Image (cartoon, one colour):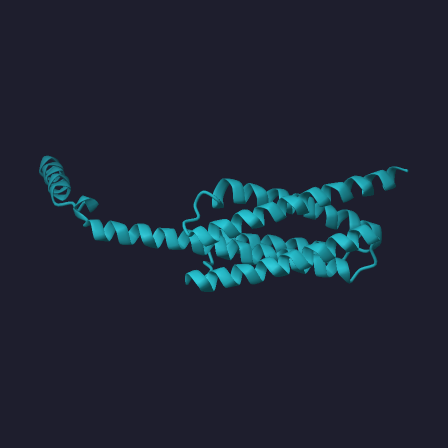
Amino acid sequence: MKSKILFLSLCTMACSSVFAVTPSHTTNSGTAAQASAAQNQQDGEVIGFLIVLNQNEMAAAKDALNKKVNPKVKSYARMLYNDHSKNLKDTMKISKKIGQSPAQTNKVASLKRKGEKAQASLSSLQDTDFEVAYIDAMVRGHEEALIIIDENLINNVNNPDLKKHLKTTRSHVQQHLNAAKQIQQNLKSQASS
């Protein structure tokens, strides 16, 4: 009895491998359509990332502008708010121009949650505590944004207009990081004196 069951099991496995459907019989047009869909998804994710990045930065900057902070921090927050507002508008224009909606991927959702969490922790702080935490968050956030842009996004963008916009965004993120690091140094030297 055991040998009959073993024999039937082996026959079933052998037959199932013979009749297995493999994707090697796809047509070139099917493969091209799949590649195009994947490229659109990547471009959509880049647009989604940029929208959420800009919204996160604008929310944090708006919070800083509504608090009593030193003039350098306030000026930095104003610059961030203005730059990210413009970048958000430019991102939306490009999205419309190329006919690509922002994708709501796990990566984009994660960035949004991270921004909301950072915003919640910052909003309860006041004065010097807020200044230090805000600038530290801006340094960390802009460093992380550069890593994501450099390692995940810039080489995966397919649309030339979107790629150009992403490169421009990257240069602004680098400028914001440099300015935040300078303010961070000033705040540390003020605290130690």
